[in-house]
Length: 507
Figure 1 (cartoon, one colour):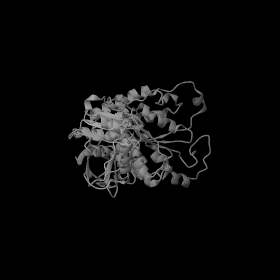
Figure 2 (figure 1 turned 180 degrees about the vertical axis):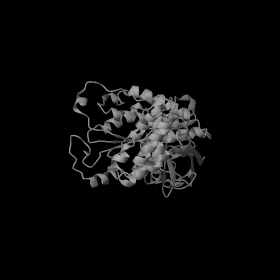
Figure 3 (figure 1 turned 90 degrees about the vertical axis):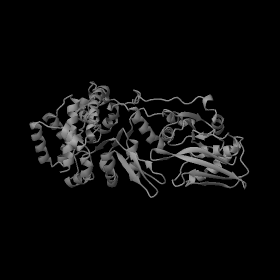
């Protein structure tokens, strides 16, 4: 047998596409090893890894020329995950397997020189692709086994070496496969930070609860040391548990980015990402050389993206957030391809009121002049600010509050209210932060007192049409938290209060 075919997969974005690995051997020199089908450098270098693996594991290497075609040939192939299917294809061309032994099997894995298998990126996406294509068996490195096994309908064989993979081919039912796992979407108590540890800051905790209940974006402004970061890091603990589809999608993104730990399965907690302000545009929204990789906005999908010291981020980096914040997806365009990544996250930002941090503080003197303060806060554009539903001031904690033995409300109690409010919103078809315009008019109708209050707020604060709708959405969330069907004036008043920073700092 001189021609043999195996199957693998290539990941583009977070989706995998089936790749046929066709191996042809013909008389010639053993030094002739040609890979075609738009391979990148890592794929072309696989010939040295494959030769050494076959020789060092006792399989031998044919004294013939080898040509490997990765089809379809019009899409770029990158990464070392094609090592295993190419090596198995060569063994098949040498007559090691019976015809049809690899029908219904997908292989992926990077080979070491001694025949061992190293983990790859995107194993979960490949397993989803295998199920969609009706492929029943999948061989992956041992470290990727739990990740790939979460897909129902695919038998995942996690192996540590090339000989172990060869041993299982054609004997699928004789070996145990990796068991599937599901997620409860909740981390262990030791990993979840609790709001009961936060002293004071009752207004800020209320704002965070409202934000969590309606999936709203939030901006905290306060002096250094007031607890903004401490509050943000506890937000994930009051969000509802990940559903199984959410866990699958989130894990796929982290797998493609290479952020899953060894032998890690589904993510058990909602992501919390906190990039430094020196991050590049590509690091924030995705990109890179070759096939674009997901950025921070996608890694925080179904979780929280926390931007500390918001004005210190580059202006173009902040402006790049507009599309993912508004649409829940981000499109990365490169010369070779255009890919879209999901990016449905809660944006939580924190900043000082001025460069020194003490503007408006009652105990510390601010040394910043009004022009300096305006330039500082002006780094955040109006369009981006309009997309942040809730603005809340976080003042310095008083001494008596810091020394108080009274524990704050636990995250579990807050989470119960958040989950009840979200269940109501699910019945409407959208979380409040993403209610479309027609649904806003239907579900956020105001009584006469609420109409007068909102009209005055619009006139005095100069709110935009987008800010008007966001006030209504926040008011709807406040009503949902209180278990009320209609939006009343007091709900509007609290929602307007969360836009007061428009007037205080940006006007």
